[in-house]
Image 1 (cartoon, rainbow, N blue to C red):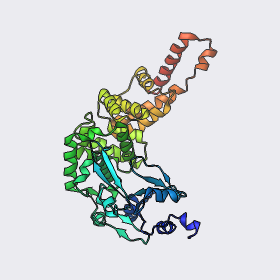
Image 2 (tube, rainbow, N blue to C red):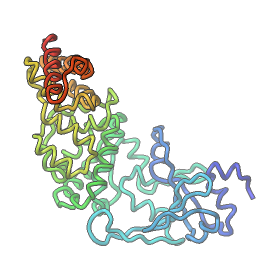
Image 3 (tube, one colour):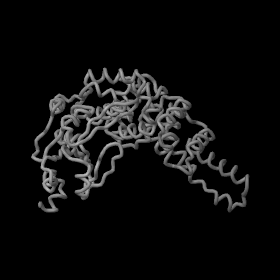
Image 4 (cartoon, one colour):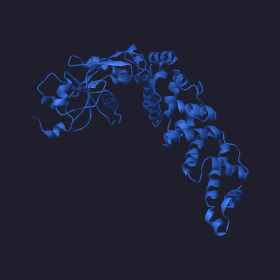
Length: 385
């Protein structure tokens, strides 16, 4: 039997050397293989086991976690190992699949059910690449191309292709024309509406957190998915919004800010409906509605109006809201409007310096205290106008 230290390195052939069935074989698959070939950083590794049964893995100490099909956690590394499987579409949506698995399922059959050719490669324990669908050529050509018409059976793949396009845009990847055409057909067919809102927000937030969030949204616009999923968004996003998203990524601004930027040209009501349909986080929704309400930023010359604006930002209790608003707004507004944004920040600083304790020491209490406090803040803001 091989040493435990080598087992901990996830050596697939070593692991199965401990089994009584030499026909069982393990392959590294999917994203890890793709990113290795691209010399792109990755953290997760997924494995497919061919020629094995669930009991075989259970006997070796693996923990079964999959409900719809057998997925197992390695006893030491906790990486996921799945039995080779085939899928049959039954019903609508991205959950409507029946999985067939067993020792007779081949590696190629398992790879054929995947979305893109670049994701349908495997690597054996000797480092040999198994590439039955031309994934390596697509990597060389920098193209995202679906494997077969079965791509259309899972509407979530439209969102994921847009996410891949954004993730690898800096490497020159584009969506293949035939894949874009299929995505357009899927978007027009309405099945994207079967994707759970919670799942949509997971995909959107992941894509918006990347280095090219504007590419993600542009691909969804190009294939008609954005309008199909979220009709509140316009049929085309403006260059102003797309450029601001790109700049937000360069500045490593938060996902909430990036999402809010994408909502900047919506009405407050459209923004609310969009956030509800996406099940966006509460923080993202609140910030997005502030963008929808206050951009374009009006010229602020009256101290009372400035304080009223700050109060809508809850500037005393939640200073981060104003900070996040101004960070993204600076990327959206014109140069001649930026003095107003700077004035808003300076006014908040002045108003925060007025403390209730000073007025209480003067004997002011109750309703009069609130009125005096607000008036003192208006006067403080007025001194910097």
